[in-house]
Length: 334
Ligand code: P6P
Image (tube, rainbow, N blue to C red; front, side):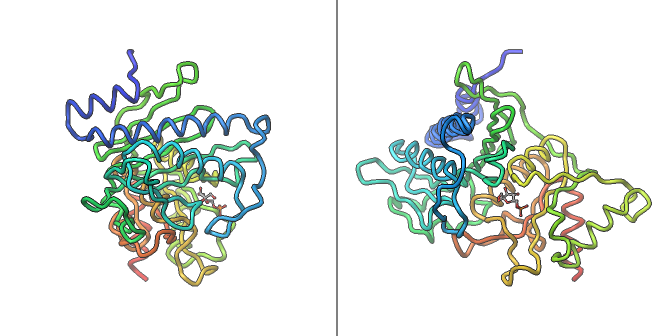
């Protein structure tokens, strides 16, 4: 079967369905090129002197890995001169990054977690880059942090790169989800999965079970019912997977179904869980919904959550529609 490249896919989408403006197409290609560079650095591992800690902390107070810092710099440098962006925001930077005056400004704003799953870097487990694209307010050349605080439903594109046995790029512009595999010999992204769909039911869940004693009742009830197996109230046995790399867990769910949960728990007073809304939960929720799944914060549709802070955290329940709806219903009952 003749395979097509990311460029050909995007050009054909733009030409045939007119659903990807040229500027957005070019922005996506810049991000995809930056992910190729990150993949190359990640792939070198110890040979590239890029493993280990950078001995610095990010805005989250997390010790940064060298690859966290390098990946962030790669995305900043690749996107500054392109002319498609008005500003960027990153998990690794306290506030937004405006495009330097020497470059033309564009109509989009790019948000990213440059290298998600950092705790896995040094032990050679899959990690990834997550990105989200919003539109800057009309004619706004220098957006403020406030302009970034748009609900996930306003995203015009979202995706991730997964640096695993293969390097993959999974992308949506609001018209389904497609997966591209990096052809390392040609250096091009090749369309390998069209219109990915998440089964509405599943027998596989993903949660960090070491936090069991901290969970609130709706999560405890749901996990206990799954653990009860075929003789329990759900009438079926469940398997569990937890890679501790959201990109890898979400990719598995996009391929074979499942429910991913990072709930709030009694450890944090703000009841927000660990994952960030703007550049983890929102892009992943757009992908999951576009693939026929569901995503909530336990109380409401994730993409309807109105952001209040750039780095705000949010509880995450996403994946197979029927299971996300079940655990969300349990939250409504409390
Ligand atoms: P825990 C990685 O650090 C991350 O942000 C997500 O990729 C992942 O799902 C989660 O945190 C893992 O958290 O508490 O299990 O280490």
